[in-house]
Length: 115
Length: 109
Image 1 (spheres, one colour):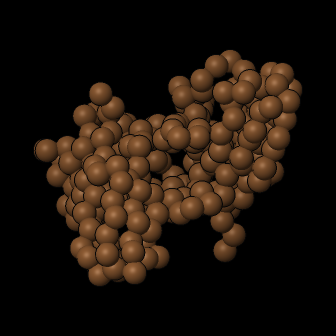
Image 2 (cartoon, chains in turn brown, blue):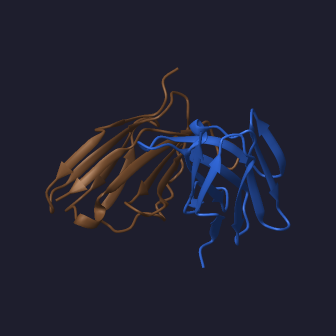
């Protein structure tokens, strides 16, 4: 079946512009995660959605970052007034249920370059 | 000190060798993941475990909760195993995975 998909695969933007990154999780997966992998850095957690519960936003690096999940399915990560340090690969993952019990399936990522 | 430490950072092996990658963590966890990331970036989950040992083909993952340590073993390594292997721990019931910096494995033919 279809895996996690993300769009766009690549995004180049100018400093100060807003960007939206999209994630389509695997159908039926109630949990959705956003991560970031900066050049030369490890992966870092950004935000987690589980069902209808309030999202865990503890990993968002600043208030320029926000995410929403509509209808319990598709999620959009928005970065306002992008900065060069926002350049990274943004990864989305989904799982069948609670994070502690379920394997996560990763999307291919969106490579964001802020000029 | 990072909450998740992996060793070695880089590993070069000859085809056929037995490989071990280690992961130590300093926080209480509910689960530990081993992930594989190939050049080009795609990430695949290899194992999720909270106790004991799991085996999948030539890959074996073990975890010792008391010692806060996990190992990933690859038997009869092959050049296609070349990738970055990442250990990540789940600290609670939420989705906040804490990642190690990865071990870059290169298997030479």
